[in-house]
Amino acid sequence: MDLNSIQEAIETHVYHIHPDLKVPLHEHATQDEIFYCIQGSGVGILEDKEVEMHVGDVFVAPAGKKHSLKSDGNMYVTTILIPVNRIICHCKQVSYGDIRKAMVSGARTVKEIQEITGAGTECGNCIKDIEKILSLACGCKMVTVETVVNAVKGGADTVEKIGEVTGAGTDCGKCKFLLQNIIDTKR
Ligand code: FES
Ligand code: FES
Image (cartoon, rainbow, N blue to C red; front, top):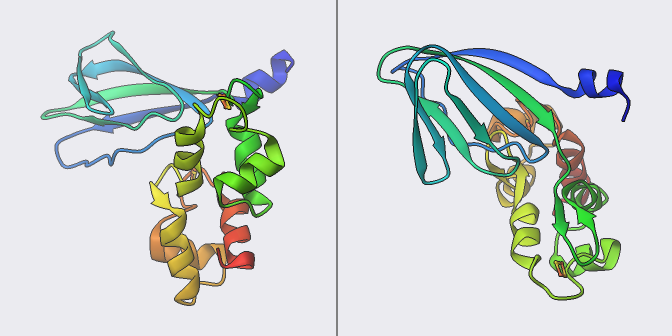
């Protein structure tokens, strides 16, 4: 990756976290997210841990880890989203992106992922991670593949309709190719 593509791939946001804002636990499978508290205070939540945040504190949510923020008062944070492509299967050097690509081409089971990518075919330590990736259609909205399949079976025949019914695909949009494949294959 050259400097320009790295710069283009990095996203930044500023959020105002307040008591009425319920930020659901969510994850970014292909981005690490760094939060920096600019003003006020609050709490960063990383899976089952909570970290107090005051001005100048930094909180890091690694790719694939569920996280959220909350504040009883006001907290202004800036975030930087940095692209990463985690290696899921170290024996076969298969990344998260490779597994998602296989899903976009129709793979839904560990066996199918093994056949397409080779992941999980040696020590087997990565099988649980593969199962977790297979189960989730949309990490931003934490919508499972099962929920999307049920929406498709219930008549949602476009990516937009799936978004209306389940919320999947309505944030970063990176899962839209997978949603389309679920519509096409009904699985
Ligand atoms: S880590 Fe995937 S088979 Fe060993
Ligand atoms: S993964 Fe971001 S909207 Fe689905």
